[in-house]
Each structure stands twice: as C-alpha cells, then as structure tokens.
Image (cartoon, rainbow, N blue to C red):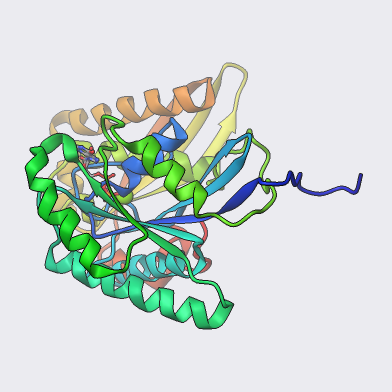
Length: 316
Ligand code: GDP
Ligand code: MG
C-alpha cells in the first residue's frame, strides 16, 4: 500500500465555510459540530477575528470547517483584515453554510452577504470549473414561533442561490444533524486529510489567548471588547503547573482602568475564569499572569496586528 491519506470509495472530504453577518451564530455552529469550544462565542458582534479551522471526522467523511469573522463594513485595519479573512474562506470552500438569524429574517446586511456569495460562486466556477454549494442555515429557531419561518423559507427559495434552506438551532442542536448531512452530501469524494485526533489548526498559545479574550468579552461592555487584544508572551511547563504570561492590549487608559477594576477585582475575575478554561483544555494546573498595556491605535498599527497574528497568512 502506498503511503498517503486513506481513500475509501465513497469517502467524502472538503472545506466548509461558515459565513454570515456578525452575531448570527457562526462560531456556535462550529462548536456544536466539534463538540468543544474551538471558536470563542459571545453576544458581542465581531468576536471572531480570524479564520478558525475545525476538523470533523467520521467513518465516511471528513469536514474541514472554516469559521470566519462576520462580513461587515470595516472601520479599522483590523476590520478590513477580518473582511479579507471572511472572503478568503469563501474562495476556498467546497460548501458554504450561510447563516442568518431567524428572528430578523433576511436583513439588508444578509442581502449583502448573499450578493458576495453569488459573486464568489460565479468567480470560482470560472476559475476552478466547479462551484461551491451554498446552504442557508436559518439559525436560532428556538427563539421564534414556527409560522415566522414560512416567509423566510419562501424568500430563500425564490433567491435560487441556495441548494437548501434549513431552519436550525445551534444552541439546542435542533436540525443540526439535517444540516450536517446536507453539507456532507455536497462534498466531493476525497481522502481523509487529517488524523481523526486532530481537531484544529490553532496553536495552543492562540487558543489560550482566545480563551482570555472570551472572558474579557463576557465581562465588559460597549467599546471595550472591540478595543482589546491578547498576546501570550510565555508558556512554560513546570513540574506541577503550566505558567502562562499574557498581555492584554487596550486602546485607551480608560479601558485599562475598566479591565483592572476596583482593587484589581475585574482582572482577577477574568483571570480565574480563563484559567479554568485553559486547565480543562490542557489537563494541567495553570498559573496565569495577566498584564494590561495601553497601545493607542493598535487596531490600525500594522506591526502590532502582525504580531497578534491578525495579518499575514489568513490561516491561524
Ligand atoms: P457569530 O458572530 O456569528 O460567530 O455568532 P456567535 O456564535 O458568537 O453567537 C452570537 C450569540 O448568539 C451568542 O450569544 C450565542 O450564544 C447566540 N446563539 C448562537 N446560536 C444560537 C441559537 O441557535 N439559539 C440561541 N438562542 N442563541 C444562539
Ligand atoms: Mg464568531
């Protein structure tokens, strides 16, 4: 037998891009299929800043899910990079799961996303001779009454863009199996590229910094979440613990004061919650040291964006 990825007849594999405007539940969908938190989730729009690869493996198929930042009108260099990353996901995907929120139906922003999808499909078809299949996921159906879905389904059919329109709830899991089967049946035949044990292409420091950022998003409001970045400076395996030092970058002295909190209480709370998540991920005790540093205008500073991994290759 020659070396190489196993290829059974009928085995399917490919890239599946999850796209949509901010906050519709893209990362929650990825996490549902991967059964763990790969991509951080919050109620704050624009939580996901980079592309996250999650690998789902079963006997007959391997799905490489690409979570992406929401498509939105960028205000900073960071925002422009996020939009670039989202577009790169569309270019590479064999299947696109386009996500909307059932509560709002199809919004103007969603229509803009649909227009992108239509362009990408046309473009990729001429470049590769094979166009990606788009499937619409009408998410958060746990929050709406069934009759609300009818006009959305009707509108979806009229667009002639989607192979299927499936109401789902990424939170309760409702219809998520149906969506998965639809996605897998649209993948080309192909080998198993990744070892089944490999779940992501994210490095450990990146996952750690994302867990810290997730806790900051959970604890703060308004402009603070968008003005924050986390950089893991050091991870050291000691006898009984893993010692981690990380810097939280903020945009303004006021943000620093908020993050540290009265007598350091806020930073302590964030650190403790993040530490629990990291300990669960790596299965060891963790010492977590957090520093807060003011870097005005970091979102427009190319050097810092590169250092944070937000620039350069789209893959994270
Ligand atoms: P993204 O910006 O598209 O990646 O959205 P997230 O996955 O970060 O989710 C945004 C918010 O919507 C979070 O608070 C999620 O918990 C919530 N959410 C996602 N999917 C569902 C769902 O099916 N039902 C409900 N009720 N909430 C959801
Ligand atoms: Mg997200």
